[in-house]
Amino acid sequence: MNALGRHILVEFYDCSPELMNDVMHIENSMVAAAETAGATVINSTFHHFSPYGVSGVVVIQESHLAIHTWPEYGYAAVDLFTCGDSVNPWVSYNYLKEAFEAGHGSSMECRRGQLELLKRLDFNLESLRDVSPKPAEQLGTITRDIWFTERDENIALSLKHSGNQLYKKDSPYQRVEIYETLAYGNMLTLDGMVMCTQKDEYVYHEMITHVPIFSHPKAKRTLVIGGGDGGTVRELLRHEQLEEVTLVEIDELVIEACKLHLPETAVAFDNPRLNLLVQDGIKYINECADSQYDLIIIDSADPVGPGEGLFTAAFYKEVFRCLTPDGLMITQSESPRFNSAVFVEIYETYKQIFGQDKVHCYLAAIPTYPTGTWSFSYSSKGDSHPLVFDREAAAAFSQAQGLKYYNEDIHTAAFALPNFVKDLLNSNTNTNPDDYSAEPTH
Ligand code: SAM
Image 1 (cartoon, helix red, strand yellow):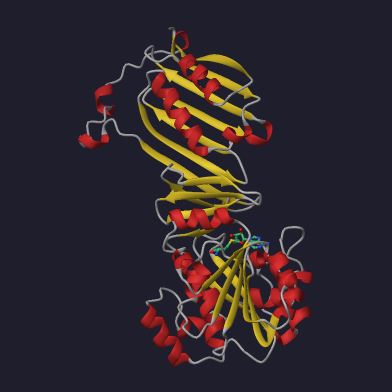
Image 2 (image 1 turned 135 degrees about the vertical axis):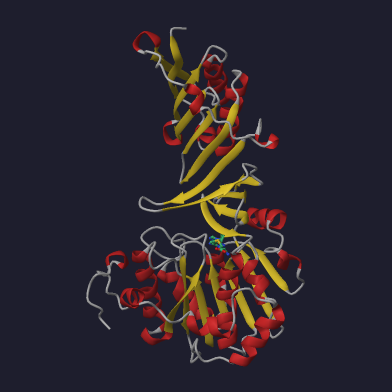
């Protein structure tokens, strides 16, 4: 061959859209395609983007194989670059065409480093040779970097995982997946969005439950809509005072996946005090009698928002009706930074239903949620106020239960809001938290 390497640019068309979005299948296929062609794999790095698409590269001693997919077009752009004569890139081409179920492919081969255009340098190459000893275990082992990425058009969160997808099923409502991340343990995603991870789920579940319970110590009957991972009801069931804990989760696959792979989050599903209903929470609320619950927690997808949310203002009016006169509603209310328009709309909706001074916002740091800053809403039908609670009881409970986030100080501090959040809540919707250069308005 009169060139240093062969570089084939490949267009695979009419591929399976499913496979074009399956980061594990793509990574395994690309590594296998390299090995089948006789290449020596050094490492692989693959990113799975949300909502869809995969990019990745397999570095080989003989150069690289790379891919970018567009599941929505059933299309993959692949390049196969091999140096020397021992590896035939067309073997990899044929392997991948079959692995991606491509209807057809087109390709162009370029000869890289044409020898007639190169002149070998008169240079002591020995001075460049890497003579640092490689530990035995490094030789011949592949380091695989496979990343799950959740993003919108501006920011992204990536978590490296093992490539061993523990669970993947489509329910009538969503795709339910569980990944084995390296830094945060097993992770539940729904339609490609991070829901909870073994390592930091306690923040969300402790804050969505203990804040309302300690500011409403007479609560007896509680209802959770959503929350199929079980974390919220696990925390509620720590409180002996509760006579009823009902969970209404629409998707039994979420419960199945978490029982299998997030057992410490799903531990409450074995608790005889739990009343578990697998049905639509909206229907349940609409059919629920008045004044049934002291606490209703909406632990579900985007609460409201322009076409995004599963729930509407009409739903929250029904929730209000189902609360006892002194009842509380708690929801996860998105991130003031990541989705400030929805955040503002959520609070405007609640204030119209519960009253301007009956709705409060509190924050928590959740590393695996976009921007890491997450919010919860606290809406009171009666006179309960989030900062009126028994600090000693909260402190003793936190200690006795071995809680990892909630305590009496965090309870109070969570309601201390940054100015940009206060401005958003005061419907200064023109405040963009990211360019907070304006003179403070406080
Ligand atoms: N606890 C999780 C966390 O740590 O972020 C949040 C739960 S996840 C955001 C949303 C849950 O609400 C899912 O289990 C989903 O199946 C459930 N869900 C969505 N719509 C629902 C509905 N209409 N009725 C009941 N459950 C619903």
